[in-house]
Image (cartoon, rainbow, N blue to C red):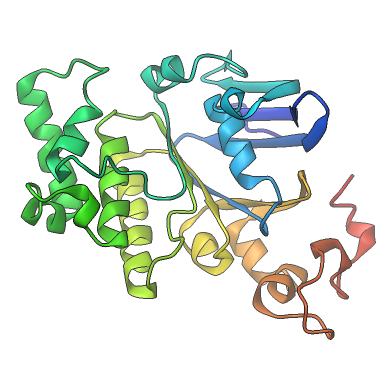
Length: 271
């Protein structure tokens, strides 16, 4: 049951592409003020689609929320204008480290403040905060973003999102393709953002161990449905989740989460 103080809430959300292709079915989740929530699942589970539904980025792919409701700060926002959502404080960092490759690091950061018409003094403070979070970006502030390493580019897109002053941060696979040490730095920055700013974060991750290590609660998606939810501590201890994410089945191939041999149907995770 959703927290009555939830900042972000999805209730029975269904998403279809081209009007007929069902991708999400009856997805419900919430993010409360000040918490980090992990959204887990294998490839094709619907994690990125869930974030795009929240951010209203489905229309460009001929998709839409066709049932259910998404509420941000108590206001229905499904299928709304994505630019308006950013102005309201709902900011997503897309998968793939989408820097403006031809611009410098600092130009990438400053461009995010354009929509807010940030005063010069406040802009300087915002830049200083990003450089404090990621000191390497201060060193490379004049370097073309396309020439940075993958980890540094991930720092740029995270910093750029912070320049928008989000009330809620949505992160899609922030550790994808990064070396373990760099991924740890990114996760540490996410925790710091949350703790120091009180900023709620919804993070999509395939690295379940890392995501549950920094989050307060989590949800597991499979084939467009939530099949498990709970505190991160409980999910880390769950034997079925541990087997699915930490091992392979007897055939040597990863199984469906529902088909893991220790899965107990009496829990009725799928309704």
